[in-house]
Length: 90
Image (cartoon, rainbow, N blue to C red):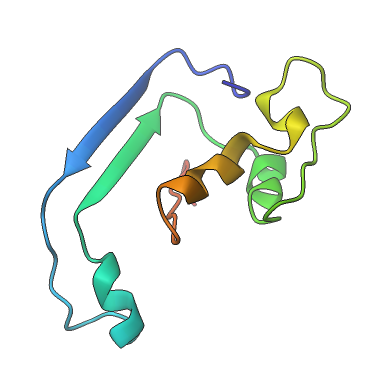
């Protein structure tokens, strides 16, 4: 919403991927299934910095922004402990 995307898609990926090449046993549970969410906008560099500051709102003074209440991306942690982000070429 903050990025003014005009499309959003949700894909429930039921696949279970191999566990042979994870970072360790603790990562095995993250190999699927997954909920993939994508839209038609990319994160700005400022957005990428902001979403790495767990629990810290950075948009308090920006009227009309979901993140001004400190919620925004942090709400993803209701669904997963390990979100993964791909945006543009990053």
